[in-house]
Length: 218
Image (cartoon, rainbow, N blue to C red; front, side, top):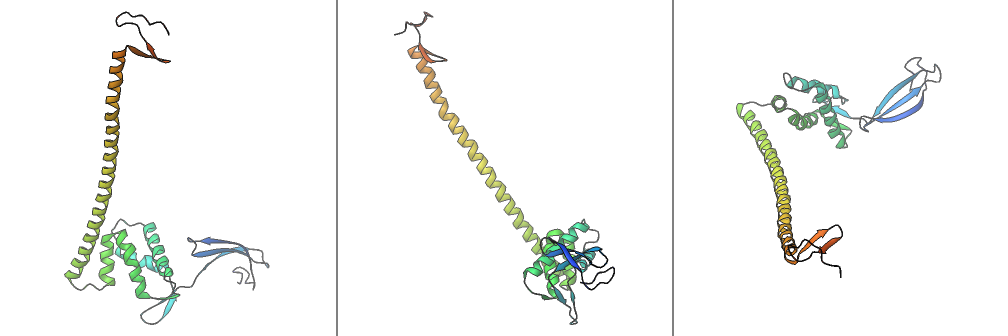
């Protein structure tokens, strides 16, 4: 690779590290002519084919720019958009194809955008899917409501299961306590009957009831 400073025809790699969650390699290079250093980023090729037939490299910035319009006025930050673009690229690269159709990018955007903001999703889907009537919006909203109901039911079921488990633990503890109480009562009754009292060394037999004297050791 040519040096960007002195245009020397060759440079030397002095350090290589993975970047962007392993999807790229960052290389530190040094020019043997001028001695200056610079960094390069190496990624696998991902080409987008447009409707016109022209092709260009995949760009996260274009994904962000397209989604940003649908997110105007919504509580979506730049970090959220950057993460969405990363998720879109990862899903496209996971397919293993070096060349993809521009239509596939829109499909890859819909899922993460629906999780990010439902209103922005409806805006984007209405343009991408060419909604032409009110019924198209109603169908999309009905799907969102059904998914929300499923998530709510799943969350309620998980909470109910946790509550049953905690109640079972409480019932088990109460049963153990109830089992110990009769045994303690029986032990106390036995002490009162045979005239024994607990000491640090165990049970010492007392003299006749009411005498207050210890019986002689045998």
